[in-house]
Image 1 (tube, one colour):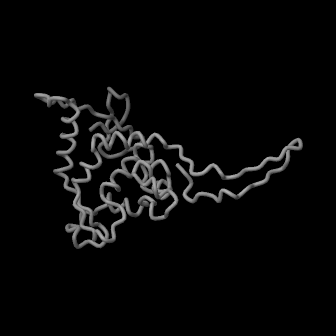
Image 2 (cartoon, one colour):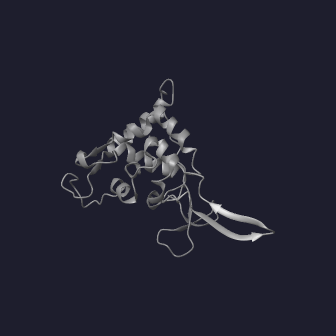
Image 3 (cartoon, one colour):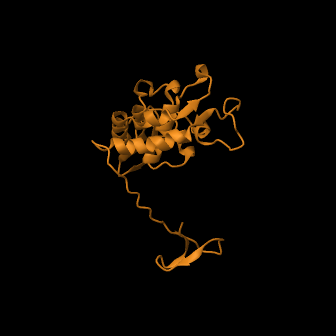
Length: 202
């Protein structure tokens, strides 16, 4: 992840000399990232069209003249962040300045421009958070991106079928449980002899 506010490249920090040699630190390395691999992930995504098709499963009720980040861009940024290991939405207040993520989202020509900043946590949160009490995104002040859950479920099946040259005649779903160990008196937990402990095993 790159720093949220790039330092002045002319800034120099002088440390104490050691054996007559000067020790200095400067910041003329330019924009640096440790997440360059996301550029290749983005290329694969563009080839398969995953985030683009996934974005079509949402209806955007925002006034488009005020929109800086499309639904597709928000989805791609969020998913790319998760792929990089940044699961928390708060991470995007720093990730929005990351040069590799900007390149992945085709903001290459705006690396130094504030207009090229990616979405921050508050904007992405509007994509994810929609209380059940909000029944109409059109009239809601903040939650105007409406997911079509039926289309989302269908898209997962389509992604799976597209991974085959010829659609399979049948699909076998092998459902397996995952144990969730508990260490107290949580309601609903029980001892499972297979997992050798008290757990939830849905």
